[in-house]
Length: 491
Image (cartoon, rainbow, N blue to C red; front, side, top):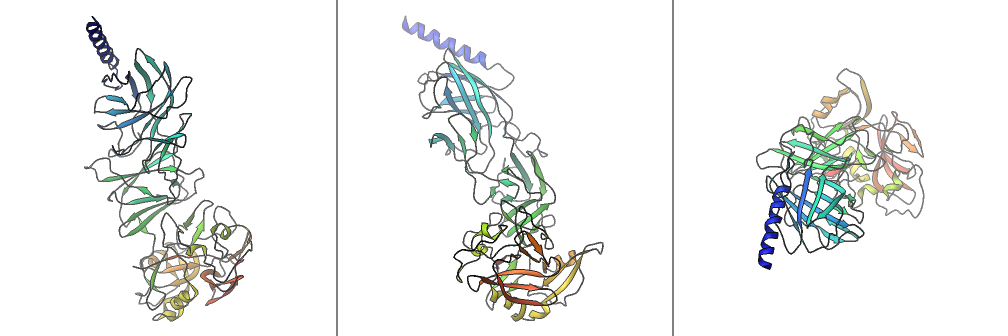
Protein backbone atom coordinates (compact mmCIF):
# COMPACT_ATOMS: atom_id res chain seq x y z
CA UNK A 1 0.00 0.00 0.00
CA UNK A 2 2.86 2.39 0.90
CA UNK A 3 4.49 1.74 -2.50
CA UNK A 4 1.22 2.61 -4.30
CA UNK A 5 0.85 5.89 -2.34
CA UNK A 6 4.51 6.77 -3.05
CA UNK A 7 4.10 6.15 -6.79
CA UNK A 8 0.94 8.27 -6.90
CA UNK A 9 2.80 11.13 -5.12
CA UNK A 10 5.64 11.08 -7.63
CA UNK A 11 3.19 11.09 -10.58
CA UNK A 12 1.23 14.01 -9.08
CA UNK A 13 4.48 15.91 -8.50
CA UNK A 14 5.61 15.40 -12.11
CA UNK A 15 2.21 16.55 -13.42
CA UNK A 16 2.39 19.69 -11.26
CA UNK A 17 5.93 20.30 -12.45
CA UNK A 18 4.93 20.07 -16.13
CA UNK A 19 1.94 22.36 -15.60
CA UNK A 20 4.08 25.02 -13.90
CA UNK A 21 6.23 25.41 -17.03
CA UNK A 22 3.41 26.27 -19.42
CA UNK A 23 4.31 29.96 -19.51
CA UNK A 24 5.46 32.44 -22.16
CA UNK A 25 8.51 33.32 -20.10
CA UNK A 26 10.88 30.34 -19.92
CA UNK A 27 10.86 28.73 -16.53
CA UNK A 28 12.64 25.80 -15.04
CA UNK A 29 12.39 22.28 -16.37
CA UNK A 30 11.85 20.45 -13.10
CA UNK A 31 13.94 17.53 -11.96
CA UNK A 32 12.77 16.28 -8.60
CA UNK A 33 15.57 15.93 -6.07
CA UNK A 34 14.05 14.03 -3.17
CA UNK A 35 17.03 14.64 -0.88
CA UNK A 36 16.48 18.41 -1.16
CA UNK A 37 12.72 18.08 -0.68
CA UNK A 38 12.10 20.93 -3.13
CA UNK A 39 11.21 21.42 -6.75
CA UNK A 40 11.30 24.87 -8.35
CA UNK A 41 8.89 26.97 -10.35
CA UNK A 42 10.82 30.17 -11.01
CA UNK A 43 10.10 32.49 -13.93
CA UNK A 44 12.88 34.68 -15.32
CA UNK A 45 11.91 38.04 -16.77
CA UNK A 46 14.42 40.34 -18.43
CA UNK A 47 17.42 39.54 -20.58
CA UNK A 48 21.06 38.87 -19.75
CA UNK A 49 22.64 41.97 -21.32
CA UNK A 50 22.40 45.55 -22.49
CA UNK A 51 19.31 45.80 -24.67
CA UNK A 52 20.20 49.13 -26.29
CA UNK A 53 23.47 47.96 -27.77
CA UNK A 54 24.13 49.16 -31.34
CA UNK A 55 25.50 45.85 -32.58
CA UNK A 56 24.10 42.35 -32.81
CA UNK A 57 27.42 40.92 -31.74
CA UNK A 58 26.70 41.73 -28.11
CA UNK A 59 24.65 39.27 -26.11
CA UNK A 60 20.99 40.15 -25.68
CA UNK A 61 19.32 36.75 -25.14
CA UNK A 62 19.76 33.84 -22.77
CA UNK A 63 22.05 31.12 -24.11
CA UNK A 64 22.74 27.48 -23.33
CA UNK A 65 24.87 27.19 -20.20
CA UNK A 66 23.95 30.54 -18.64
CA UNK A 67 23.78 30.34 -14.86
CA UNK A 68 21.85 32.30 -12.25
CA UNK A 69 22.79 31.91 -8.58
CA UNK A 70 20.05 32.10 -5.93
CA UNK A 71 20.63 33.13 -2.30
CA UNK A 72 17.90 32.63 0.30
CA UNK A 73 16.72 34.36 3.47
CA UNK A 74 13.74 32.43 4.90
CA UNK A 75 11.05 34.36 6.74
CA UNK A 76 12.06 34.93 10.34
CA UNK A 77 15.59 33.72 9.67
CA UNK A 78 18.94 34.93 8.38
CA UNK A 79 20.71 34.65 5.06
CA UNK A 80 21.53 30.99 4.46
CA UNK A 81 25.28 30.75 4.76
CA UNK A 82 25.85 27.12 3.87
CA UNK A 83 23.87 26.67 0.68
CA UNK A 84 22.68 28.37 -2.48
CA UNK A 85 20.94 27.26 -5.67
CA UNK A 86 22.01 27.33 -9.30
CA UNK A 87 19.61 27.86 -12.21
CA UNK A 88 21.10 26.63 -15.51
CA UNK A 89 19.63 27.43 -18.92
CA UNK A 90 19.65 24.61 -21.49
CA UNK A 91 18.57 26.69 -24.50
CA UNK A 92 14.83 26.52 -23.87
CA UNK A 93 14.25 26.30 -20.11
CA UNK A 94 15.83 26.54 -16.66
CA UNK A 95 16.79 23.72 -14.28
CA UNK A 96 17.47 24.48 -10.63
CA UNK A 97 19.69 22.62 -8.18
CA UNK A 98 20.19 23.21 -4.46
CA UNK A 99 23.81 22.66 -3.49
CA UNK A 100 23.06 21.42 0.02
CA UNK A 101 20.06 20.40 2.12
CA UNK A 102 18.30 23.45 3.52
CA UNK A 103 15.07 24.47 5.19
CA UNK A 104 13.51 27.26 3.11
CA UNK A 105 10.51 27.45 5.47
CA UNK A 106 7.17 28.44 3.96
CA UNK A 107 8.75 31.33 2.10
CA UNK A 108 10.99 34.35 2.42
CA UNK A 109 13.13 36.44 0.14
CA UNK A 110 15.89 35.64 -2.32
CA UNK A 111 18.38 37.47 -4.49
CA UNK A 112 19.38 36.22 -7.92
CA UNK A 113 22.70 37.01 -9.61
CA UNK A 114 23.73 36.31 -13.21
CA UNK A 115 27.37 36.79 -14.26
CA UNK A 116 28.42 36.43 -17.90
CA UNK A 117 31.45 34.28 -18.72
CA UNK A 118 31.06 32.35 -15.50
CA UNK A 119 32.84 29.02 -15.65
CA UNK A 120 32.31 25.81 -13.72
CA UNK A 121 35.45 26.57 -11.73
CA UNK A 122 33.86 29.71 -10.26
CA UNK A 123 31.28 29.21 -7.52
CA UNK A 124 29.98 31.42 -4.71
CA UNK A 125 31.79 31.17 -1.37
CA UNK A 126 30.69 32.47 2.01
CA UNK A 127 33.05 34.55 4.16
CA UNK A 128 33.08 37.83 6.08
CA UNK A 129 29.29 37.67 6.59
CA UNK A 130 28.49 37.64 2.88
CA UNK A 131 28.45 35.50 -0.22
CA UNK A 132 31.25 36.28 -2.68
CA UNK A 133 31.53 35.62 -6.41
CA UNK A 134 35.07 36.27 -7.62
CA UNK A 135 34.40 36.78 -11.30
CA UNK A 136 36.62 39.61 -12.52
CA UNK A 137 35.70 42.82 -14.30
CA UNK A 138 32.31 42.01 -15.80
CA UNK A 139 28.85 43.42 -15.26
CA UNK A 140 26.28 41.45 -13.37
CA UNK A 141 22.53 41.10 -13.77
CA UNK A 142 20.42 40.67 -10.65
CA UNK A 143 17.05 40.65 -8.93
CA UNK A 144 17.38 41.76 -5.31
CA UNK A 145 15.35 40.62 -2.32
CA UNK A 146 12.42 39.08 -4.23
CA UNK A 147 9.71 37.14 -2.42
CA UNK A 148 9.45 33.39 -2.77
CA UNK A 149 6.81 30.99 -1.49
CA UNK A 150 6.99 27.25 -0.85
CA UNK A 151 3.82 25.38 -1.75
CA UNK A 152 3.66 21.59 -1.44
CA UNK A 153 7.43 21.37 -1.71
CA UNK A 154 7.66 23.69 -4.73
CA UNK A 155 9.57 26.99 -4.50
CA UNK A 156 7.80 29.67 -6.51
CA UNK A 157 9.16 33.11 -7.47
CA UNK A 158 9.39 35.58 -10.34
CA UNK A 159 12.72 37.25 -11.10
CA UNK A 160 12.97 40.60 -12.88
CA UNK A 161 16.63 40.58 -13.86
CA UNK A 162 18.29 43.98 -14.39
CA UNK A 163 21.80 45.34 -14.79
CA UNK A 164 22.62 47.92 -12.07
CA UNK A 165 22.16 51.44 -13.35
CA UNK A 166 25.84 52.46 -13.14
CA UNK A 167 27.35 49.85 -15.46
CA UNK A 168 28.61 50.62 -18.95
CA UNK A 169 29.71 48.47 -21.88
CA UNK A 170 32.20 49.13 -24.70
CA UNK A 171 32.30 47.23 -27.97
CA UNK A 172 35.32 47.38 -30.31
CA UNK A 173 36.19 45.40 -33.42
CA UNK A 174 39.61 44.74 -34.88
CA UNK A 175 41.31 43.82 -31.59
CA UNK A 176 41.90 40.59 -29.66
CA UNK A 177 40.38 39.60 -26.34
CA UNK A 178 43.84 39.79 -24.79
CA UNK A 179 43.77 43.58 -25.10
CA UNK A 180 43.08 45.83 -22.12
CA UNK A 181 40.73 48.82 -21.93
CA UNK A 182 40.89 51.66 -19.41
CA UNK A 183 38.67 54.72 -19.14
CA UNK A 184 38.91 57.64 -16.74
CA UNK A 185 35.10 57.66 -16.37
CA UNK A 186 35.00 53.99 -15.37
CA UNK A 187 36.12 51.75 -12.50
CA UNK A 188 36.50 47.98 -12.71
CA UNK A 189 35.78 45.50 -9.93
CA UNK A 190 36.97 42.01 -9.15
CA UNK A 191 34.00 40.53 -7.32
CA UNK A 192 30.29 40.56 -6.48
CA UNK A 193 28.90 40.25 -2.97
CA UNK A 194 25.51 39.39 -1.46
CA UNK A 195 25.18 40.56 2.14
CA UNK A 196 22.84 39.65 4.96
CA UNK A 197 20.12 41.98 3.66
CA UNK A 198 20.35 40.31 0.22
CA UNK A 199 21.81 43.49 -1.27
CA UNK A 200 23.95 42.77 -4.35
CA UNK A 201 27.03 44.92 -4.97
CA UNK A 202 30.56 45.07 -6.32
CA UNK A 203 32.86 45.78 -3.40
CA UNK A 204 36.47 45.29 -4.46
CA UNK A 205 37.70 47.89 -6.92
CA UNK A 206 40.74 46.97 -8.99
CA UNK A 207 43.71 49.24 -8.35
CA UNK A 208 44.72 49.58 -11.99
CA UNK A 209 41.29 50.23 -13.53
CA UNK A 210 41.94 47.72 -16.30
CA UNK A 211 38.98 46.08 -18.04
CA UNK A 212 39.69 42.73 -19.70
CA UNK A 213 38.37 42.15 -23.20
CA UNK A 214 35.93 39.28 -23.75
CA UNK A 215 34.23 37.68 -26.73
CA UNK A 216 30.58 36.63 -26.70
CA UNK A 217 31.07 34.08 -29.46
CA UNK A 218 33.94 32.57 -31.41
CA UNK A 219 32.53 33.73 -34.74
CA UNK A 220 32.31 37.42 -33.89
CA UNK A 221 35.26 39.76 -34.37
CA UNK A 222 34.16 42.21 -31.69
CA UNK A 223 35.41 42.46 -28.12
CA UNK A 224 33.33 43.72 -25.20
CA UNK A 225 34.53 45.43 -22.04
CA UNK A 226 32.53 46.21 -18.92
CA UNK A 227 33.04 48.76 -16.17
CA UNK A 228 31.18 50.77 -13.58
CA UNK A 229 30.70 54.52 -13.85
CA UNK A 230 32.53 56.59 -11.27
CA UNK A 231 30.46 58.56 -8.79
CA UNK A 232 32.03 61.79 -10.10
CA UNK A 233 32.80 61.69 -13.81
CA UNK A 234 35.57 63.82 -15.33
CA UNK A 235 34.26 66.12 -18.06
CA UNK A 236 36.52 64.73 -20.80
CA UNK A 237 36.31 61.00 -21.44
CA UNK A 238 39.69 59.33 -22.01
CA UNK A 239 39.45 55.81 -23.45
CA UNK A 240 42.63 53.75 -23.89
CA UNK A 241 43.34 50.37 -25.48
CA UNK A 242 46.55 48.56 -24.57
CA UNK A 243 47.80 46.26 -27.30
CA UNK A 244 50.99 44.25 -27.51
CA UNK A 245 52.79 47.09 -29.30
CA UNK A 246 51.59 49.93 -27.09
CA UNK A 247 48.69 51.92 -25.70
CA UNK A 248 46.36 54.03 -27.83
CA UNK A 249 43.86 56.68 -26.76
CA UNK A 250 40.72 58.45 -27.73
CA UNK A 251 39.65 61.61 -25.94
CA UNK A 252 36.01 62.64 -26.16
CA UNK A 253 35.92 66.27 -25.07
CA UNK A 254 33.05 67.28 -22.81
CA UNK A 255 31.63 63.73 -22.73
CA UNK A 256 30.34 62.08 -19.58
CA UNK A 257 29.34 58.47 -20.04
CA UNK A 258 25.90 57.04 -19.34
CA UNK A 259 24.58 53.62 -18.33
CA UNK A 260 24.49 52.12 -21.81
CA UNK A 261 26.44 50.19 -24.43
CA UNK A 262 28.90 52.14 -26.58
CA UNK A 263 30.05 50.98 -29.99
CA UNK A 264 33.56 52.39 -30.48
CA UNK A 265 33.79 50.87 -33.97
CA UNK A 266 36.84 49.34 -35.57
CA UNK A 267 40.20 49.92 -33.97
CA UNK A 268 42.78 51.57 -36.21
CA UNK A 269 45.73 53.86 -35.65
CA UNK A 270 43.92 56.59 -37.59
CA UNK A 271 41.17 57.03 -35.00
CA UNK A 272 43.23 55.97 -31.95
CA UNK A 273 46.51 57.78 -31.22
CA UNK A 274 49.45 56.49 -29.16
CA UNK A 275 49.73 57.43 -25.48
CA UNK A 276 53.45 57.77 -26.12
CA UNK A 277 54.67 60.07 -28.86
CA UNK A 278 56.42 58.05 -31.57
CA UNK A 279 59.89 59.61 -31.48
CA UNK A 280 62.80 58.42 -29.35
CA UNK A 281 64.94 60.94 -27.45
CA UNK A 282 68.43 60.25 -26.09
CA UNK A 283 68.81 61.25 -22.42
CA UNK A 284 72.24 59.69 -21.95
CA UNK A 285 74.84 57.91 -24.04
CA UNK A 286 73.05 54.62 -23.40
CA UNK A 287 69.39 55.44 -22.78
CA UNK A 288 66.49 56.78 -24.85
CA UNK A 289 62.93 57.68 -23.83
CA UNK A 290 59.53 58.44 -25.34
CA UNK A 291 57.35 61.28 -24.06
CA UNK A 292 53.72 61.17 -23.03
CA UNK A 293 51.30 62.97 -25.37
CA UNK A 294 50.44 65.63 -22.77
CA UNK A 295 51.33 67.12 -19.42
CA UNK A 296 50.36 65.36 -16.21
CA UNK A 297 47.30 66.54 -14.28
CA UNK A 298 45.18 65.49 -11.30
CA UNK A 299 41.43 65.14 -11.91
CA UNK A 300 40.40 65.21 -8.27
CA UNK A 301 40.39 61.40 -8.21
CA UNK A 302 43.18 60.18 -10.53
CA UNK A 303 46.26 61.18 -12.49
CA UNK A 304 45.78 61.59 -16.24
CA UNK A 305 47.38 63.31 -19.20
CA UNK A 306 45.99 66.44 -20.79
CA UNK A 307 43.95 65.79 -23.92
CA UNK A 308 46.76 67.16 -26.13
CA UNK A 309 50.25 68.67 -25.97
CA UNK A 310 48.98 72.23 -25.75
CA UNK A 311 46.59 72.12 -22.79
CA UNK A 312 47.33 73.11 -19.19
CA UNK A 313 45.39 74.87 -16.41
CA UNK A 314 45.79 78.64 -16.10
CA UNK A 315 43.91 78.96 -12.80
CA UNK A 316 43.33 76.90 -9.67
CA UNK A 317 40.84 74.06 -9.93
CA UNK A 318 41.01 71.18 -7.44
CA UNK A 319 39.59 68.89 -10.15
CA UNK A 320 42.21 69.93 -12.70
CA UNK A 321 45.59 70.43 -11.07
CA UNK A 322 48.48 70.70 -13.51
CA UNK A 323 51.10 72.38 -11.27
CA UNK A 324 52.66 70.16 -8.59
CA UNK A 325 54.86 70.71 -5.57
CA UNK A 326 58.09 68.71 -5.57
CA UNK A 327 57.15 66.10 -2.98
CA UNK A 328 57.52 62.38 -2.42
CA UNK A 329 53.82 62.09 -1.61
CA UNK A 330 51.34 62.45 -4.48
CA UNK A 331 48.51 63.91 -2.36
CA UNK A 332 50.87 66.59 -1.05
CA UNK A 333 52.00 67.40 -4.60
CA UNK A 334 48.53 68.41 -5.86
CA UNK A 335 47.33 69.97 -2.59
CA UNK A 336 46.40 73.64 -2.56
CA UNK A 337 49.08 74.46 -0.01
CA UNK A 338 52.61 73.17 0.43
CA UNK A 339 53.33 71.57 3.81
CA UNK A 340 56.90 71.08 5.00
CA UNK A 341 58.02 68.14 7.08
CA UNK A 342 61.12 65.94 7.04
CA UNK A 343 62.30 66.64 3.47
CA UNK A 344 65.74 65.30 2.55
CA UNK A 345 68.10 65.53 -0.40
CA UNK A 346 67.60 61.80 -1.03
CA UNK A 347 63.83 62.19 -1.58
CA UNK A 348 62.28 60.64 -4.70
CA UNK A 349 59.68 62.63 -6.64
CA UNK A 350 56.22 61.03 -6.36
CA UNK A 351 56.08 60.19 -10.09
CA UNK A 352 59.31 58.20 -9.83
CA UNK A 353 58.27 56.01 -6.91
CA UNK A 354 57.59 52.34 -7.56
CA UNK A 355 53.91 51.65 -8.19
CA UNK A 356 53.01 55.07 -9.64
CA UNK A 357 50.43 54.43 -12.35
CA UNK A 358 48.46 56.34 -14.98
CA UNK A 359 45.57 54.62 -16.76
CA UNK A 360 46.66 51.47 -14.96
CA UNK A 361 50.18 51.60 -16.42
CA UNK A 362 53.47 51.67 -14.57
CA UNK A 363 56.90 52.71 -15.89
CA UNK A 364 56.21 56.44 -16.07
CA UNK A 365 58.82 58.80 -14.63
CA UNK A 366 60.18 62.34 -14.64
CA UNK A 367 63.59 62.94 -16.24
CA UNK A 368 66.50 63.75 -13.92
CA UNK A 369 68.47 67.00 -14.14
CA UNK A 370 71.30 65.24 -15.95
CA UNK A 371 68.88 63.61 -18.43
CA UNK A 372 67.22 66.93 -19.26
CA UNK A 373 70.66 68.50 -19.70
CA UNK A 374 71.84 65.71 -22.00
CA UNK A 375 68.64 65.89 -24.06
CA UNK A 376 68.74 69.68 -24.47
CA UNK A 377 72.48 70.33 -24.67
CA UNK A 378 74.65 67.22 -25.15
CA UNK A 379 73.14 64.70 -27.59
CA UNK A 380 74.07 64.91 -31.25
CA UNK A 381 73.04 68.27 -32.73
CA UNK A 382 71.18 68.99 -29.47
CA UNK A 383 70.81 72.76 -29.75
CA UNK A 384 69.38 72.48 -33.28
CA UNK A 385 66.76 70.01 -32.03
CA UNK A 386 65.06 72.46 -29.67
CA UNK A 387 63.44 75.82 -30.23
CA UNK A 388 60.79 78.17 -28.87
CA UNK A 389 57.98 78.11 -31.43
CA UNK A 390 54.37 79.13 -32.01
CA UNK A 391 51.79 76.47 -32.87
CA UNK A 392 48.72 77.22 -35.00
CA UNK A 393 45.67 75.21 -35.97
CA UNK A 394 44.34 74.46 -39.44
CA UNK A 395 42.77 77.93 -39.64
CA UNK A 396 46.07 79.63 -38.78
CA UNK A 397 44.80 80.57 -35.32
CA UNK A 398 47.50 80.53 -32.65
CA UNK A 399 47.15 77.64 -30.21
CA UNK A 400 50.09 78.49 -28.00
CA UNK A 401 53.77 79.18 -27.66
CA UNK A 402 56.28 76.81 -26.13
CA UNK A 403 59.39 74.70 -26.38
CA UNK A 404 59.60 72.14 -29.19
CA UNK A 405 62.05 69.25 -28.84
CA UNK A 406 62.79 67.02 -31.83
CA UNK A 407 63.52 63.28 -31.64
CA UNK A 408 66.95 61.86 -32.42
CA UNK A 409 65.91 60.94 -35.95
CA UNK A 410 64.79 64.48 -36.85
CA UNK A 411 66.83 66.14 -39.61
CA UNK A 412 65.39 69.68 -39.23
CA UNK A 413 65.57 72.55 -39.32
CA UNK A 414 62.90 73.47 -36.76
CA UNK A 415 60.52 76.19 -37.83
CA UNK A 416 57.94 78.56 -36.44
CA UNK A 417 55.01 78.55 -36.60
CA UNK A 418 54.07 74.86 -36.70
CA UNK A 419 50.67 73.53 -37.58
CA UNK A 420 49.35 70.91 -35.17
CA UNK A 421 49.25 68.26 -37.89
CA UNK A 422 52.88 68.89 -38.87
CA UNK A 423 53.99 68.83 -35.25
CA UNK A 424 52.37 65.45 -34.69
CA UNK A 425 53.54 64.01 -38.00
CA UNK A 426 57.17 64.79 -37.20
CA UNK A 427 56.88 63.36 -33.66
CA UNK A 428 57.88 66.64 -32.02
CA UNK A 429 57.40 67.18 -28.29
CA UNK A 430 55.71 70.48 -27.41
CA UNK A 431 55.96 71.90 -23.88
CA UNK A 432 53.62 74.86 -23.34
CA UNK A 433 54.41 77.96 -21.28
CA UNK A 434 52.69 76.68 -18.17
CA UNK A 435 53.82 79.22 -15.57
CA UNK A 436 53.90 78.12 -11.94
CA UNK A 437 51.57 77.97 -8.91
CA UNK A 438 51.77 79.28 -5.38
CA UNK A 439 48.86 77.91 -3.33
CA UNK A 440 45.74 78.64 -5.42
CA UNK A 441 47.29 81.26 -7.70
CA UNK A 442 48.82 80.46 -11.11
CA UNK A 443 51.27 83.03 -12.46
CA UNK A 444 53.32 83.56 -15.65
CA UNK A 445 51.10 81.19 -17.66
CA UNK A 446 51.75 81.85 -21.35
CA UNK A 447 54.98 83.67 -20.46
CA UNK A 448 57.39 81.11 -18.96
CA UNK A 449 57.43 77.33 -18.94
CA UNK A 450 58.47 75.59 -15.71
CA UNK A 451 58.97 71.82 -15.59
CA UNK A 452 60.28 69.80 -12.68
CA UNK A 453 63.16 67.38 -13.01
CA UNK A 454 63.31 64.31 -10.78
CA UNK A 455 66.40 65.62 -8.96
CA UNK A 456 66.32 67.01 -5.43
CA UNK A 457 69.22 69.20 -4.26
CA UNK A 458 68.38 69.49 -0.54
CA UNK A 459 65.38 69.44 1.77
CA UNK A 460 64.10 72.76 0.44
CA UNK A 461 64.81 72.74 -3.28
CA UNK A 462 64.93 70.70 -6.48
CA UNK A 463 66.10 71.20 -10.04
CA UNK A 464 63.70 72.45 -12.69
CA UNK A 465 63.91 73.14 -16.41
CA UNK A 466 62.43 76.45 -17.52
CA UNK A 467 62.26 78.52 -20.68
CA UNK A 468 60.94 81.75 -22.18
CA UNK A 469 63.31 82.95 -24.89
CA UNK A 470 66.08 80.53 -23.89
CA UNK A 471 66.26 77.24 -22.00
CA UNK A 472 67.74 76.89 -18.50
CA UNK A 473 68.11 74.34 -15.72
CA UNK A 474 68.30 75.76 -12.21
CA UNK A 475 67.30 75.21 -8.58
CA UNK A 476 63.84 76.23 -7.36
CA UNK A 477 61.96 75.90 -4.05
CA UNK A 478 59.92 72.72 -3.74
CA UNK A 479 57.03 74.94 -2.63
CA UNK A 480 56.71 76.47 -6.12
CA UNK A 481 54.35 74.15 -7.99
CA UNK A 482 55.37 73.40 -11.57
CA UNK A 483 54.29 71.31 -14.56
CA UNK A 484 55.46 67.73 -15.13
CA UNK A 485 55.92 65.93 -18.44
CA UNK A 486 56.48 62.20 -18.07
CA UNK A 487 58.45 59.71 -20.13
CA UNK A 488 58.89 55.97 -20.46
CA UNK A 489 62.18 54.30 -21.25
CA UNK A 490 62.32 53.24 -24.89
CA UNK A 491 62.63 49.54 -25.54
